Length: 139
Image 1 (tube, one colour):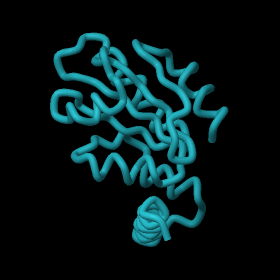
Image 2: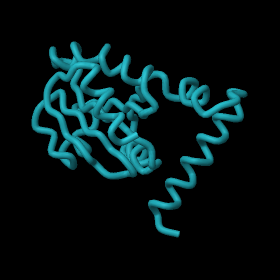
Image 3: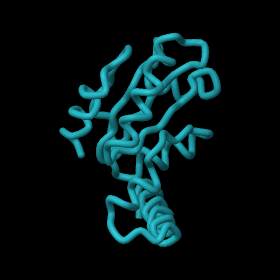
Image 4: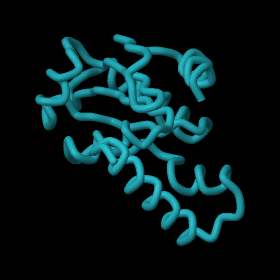
């Protein structure tokens, strides 16, 4: 089993455990209980686990000092609440290595991952409808 498969399996086990802990009956309930808010990435390992999980993941690379990032924050929160995608937030100041790895040259920059691979990159503020539509293409 490859390292990526091991990570995916571990993530699936964690999600199943979370589902059991919430007592949710259906997948939709589990999703809303588990990912109704953006996940603030605390480490490279956590980022890799989120992306490798095989789900659709919207990653918002942001900075606290960035005005447009602050404008995007409630939009990203709404997308997390209204879609099946995992929404992750990466502080580029705290995680410069990740920002460099994904060629983040300006903030906000968003990446959409599907099946563990980056499929879209967006720079600048986007409207909720545009993000929801884009996620729907890969979900």
